[in-house]
Image 1: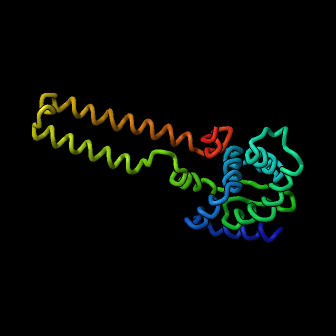
Image 2: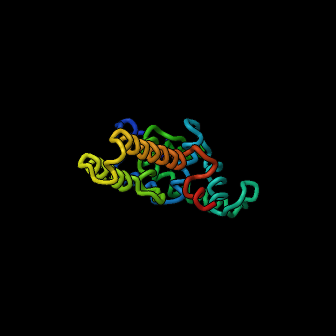
Length: 196
């Protein structure tokens, strides 16, 4: 058993949750994000470093898997084996068996989604959007309640329906973006989808 395996096994046995610093360290590097994405796509199965290196090299170079050269593959493979995978294993997100050349996800990998949604940086800041929508809805309710013209002309029930529809449409759009950013759900990681 390698030192990396020992560190990861000790970590998983203690059932310690990942800290924010550990998660941000993992997500700070594109290759580690790609590893997370690929493991999410494969669910609970073990993946060889070679498979990871091939797909990551293809994504990094914007080419098909069949076009990867030995140079592309070796550069990614070496970085994964010597740096990225050991770092990820230390946090307990993966099990890395250096001797067999295999990587598999742990239950801690599920925690990563929550942070990707926050740092993904899609165009819409949802927390501010909902805060603004709530403010508009509160102002509308107050204006209708006070009978401000022309809002008082339309029934209160109709204005309530408008508020409910606005929140329903917003929640539907938010859900669409959340699914779009979900790891392992599409052919490419979210950051590559936005480039296409």
